[in-house]
Structure formats: C-alpha cells, structure tokens
Length: 269
Image (cartoon, rainbow, N blue to C red; front, side, top):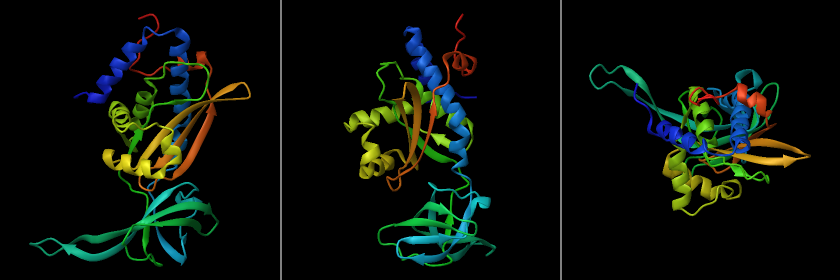
C-alpha cells in the first residue's frame, strides 16, 4: 500500500524529535495519548443523521431531531431543499433528486421531541421553510488540524502533535485529515496566527476554502490550578463558528508511554 506523503513527513517530524529532551518528548506523548481519550467524543459529535425542518421563527429553526437520532448542541447541519428528479438518459429510471443548499443549522438545544438551532443562510439562497431537509453527511468529513497553541510555560517541542491528532482522526474512518505540513505552510504564507481562527470567523472561512475543509481542529495546552490540560476546539470552516470544545487534564507520563503510537520507535530502539 502506498504511503501518504504527509505520513512520510510524520516520520521526519518524529526523527527530528528524537534528539529532544525527554521532558519535551514526554509532553508530546501525553498530548497524543490524551487526545486518544477524547477522540470518541469528537466522533460522537458527527453522527450521520438526517431530518426535517418542522418550523421556522426568524433565524431559529426547529428540527425533528432528538438525542435518540444523535442530535446534540454544537452540531452544524446542512439545510437543503430537494428539487426535481433527475433520470438516466437512456432508461429514464429516476436516479435521484437535485438539491439546493439553503444554509446551515447550528444546534443549540435538544429537547425530548425536537431540537432548536440557529440558522445561518447562504447568500442569495431561497428562504428556509418547513419540510426542508437537514443533515450531517454520511461521507468522511474533511478537517485540518492546526499547530498546537501552547499557553503554558513548558516550552516543549510539540511539532509532531498535529500529525498525531490528524492520524488519530483518519483512523476513525469518519474524518479525512489534511496534511498538517500543508496547514502550517498555509498559515505561514498568509501570515496568520492560529489564535486568529478563534476570534476571526472570516479567517476560518477564507482559509478553509483554500484547503477545502469543513472544519478546523485547534489543540490548546493550558495550565489551570497546577494541572496542564489539553483543550481541543472544533471551528466550522463553513461559517467560522466555534462549535464545541473538549478538555481533559493530560495523562501521566507513564500512562503516555504505555499508549505509544504504532509508528513510534520503542525507547530502547
């Protein structure tokens, strides 16, 4: 099987780190292992679901999706309207229906019989109405993992962290991750800091179009009450909105060692 170019770069990134101080290498291990514990929560935020708009009240949508169907606050669903049937040119058998994207529904409340969402329209699209469809795609979701924002005083070498997180996302088969090297080069060429994605939606949208991604995963290291945490925030590359965050205290160094990734050499190698 042919190796992905960015996986080859991952090997290079790890090789560069082999000469780093053990504390630095250990911190990267802890970040990777901690993300592994958060990963299923990230996957759970993107179930392949489809439903209907049941009511519209200004910029509020009410959907026929509940927790049972997989709806949860922080999700962003595509709002669409089905059009005419298209047919096979020879047999005239129906193959599907045209669809028009109307905008995006960001779920804010999930109640026992429906969910409430904020509506963000697509410019020049028709107004949304009851019986329009909403969905989270069944296809793989394309995501870009950005370089780690380190708000601690540890000064660790975290260069391989985006590669580990991207590979973890890839292995779930729910996401398609962009080469983290390409992500870093994009930020450098646009003279953009990662932190800008968190406060400037227009940046998240513009850069997202360049990479053709649906979302950004922003890993942040921070200290709180004597403990170091990993915080990962998902930002929509379609609307620029931060949709959800997950936070966990870093695993212990010995636990991280036990959870080494399959591509990494053992300490004695």
